[in-house]
Length: 163
Image (cartoon, rainbow, N blue to C red; front, side, top):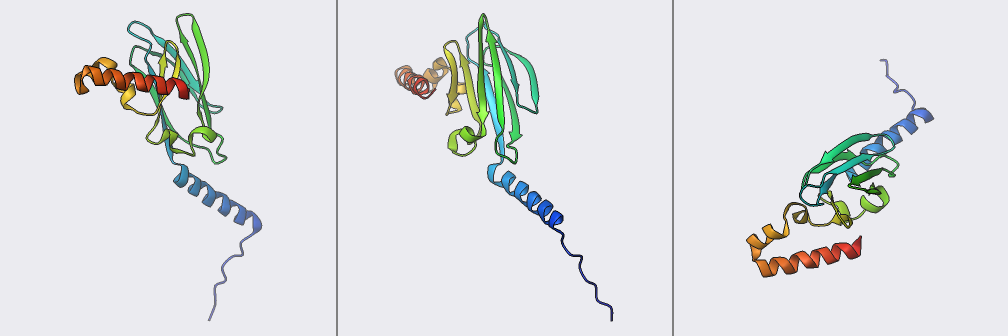
């Protein structure tokens, strides 16, 4: 009776196997991220947005009021994914690291997506997606003008302190 002997695993095969398992586990643990950048500059102001990473240039986008640019990606195996954006509106220019793995991937900061609003006085990280889609006036119609004004002002103050 002939017996079949399985091939011996070499050290290089072991390293490749470990790398594949680590990559698969990192994707399961970290998962896909979604980034949204919205023009909240006001009616008639166009935002010129150019976002990229070391490996991916997402191109230049012209965003009208309340338009947004969004993209999705996986954090790299080294855990150092970085996306940055250049902003131009009127005579104002800015540059910001919009997604940094160490800052954004390891806590609840970007659960459900990283939402950013570009406003005349700066870039705001929006922890509540409602803030990216509803204006103060629309909030007023939904929950009443006095309450909406308090909610809006509280959120604006909170975001300004966190940024």
